[in-house]
Image 1 (tube, one colour):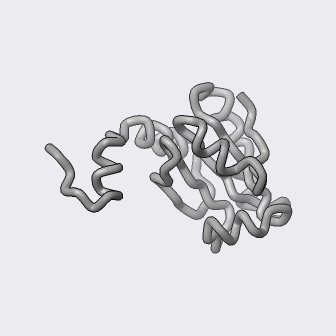
Image 2 (image 1 turned 60 degrees about the vertical axis):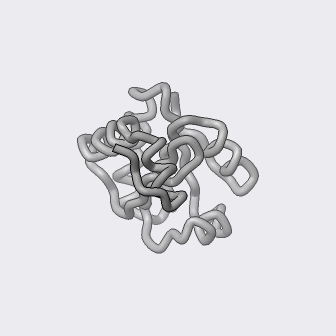
Length: 122
């Protein structure tokens, strides 16, 4: 599955309606972004159960500001509508695979408990 363009109009729905969503915040003038783009696209073809979205920070400055993007590329991962990972910088293929596996492996009951300020159950 190829990546999808995320905009102010569809961002929230895509993030909340899908299990795992990876978001690449990028810009055409950014050379690290251009280097990371093929890595992101290759991963999108490999992981059909994950939505790979791209936010063009030049076309969507409001969305970039709302996400507090200070450096690009920035990769964010959402699971069940919750932000579970955010890191600036281009990842190598192996690094991106590690992020995807880590997001898959999350115990979302524990994540929700931490967010709600409850001690995690054992």
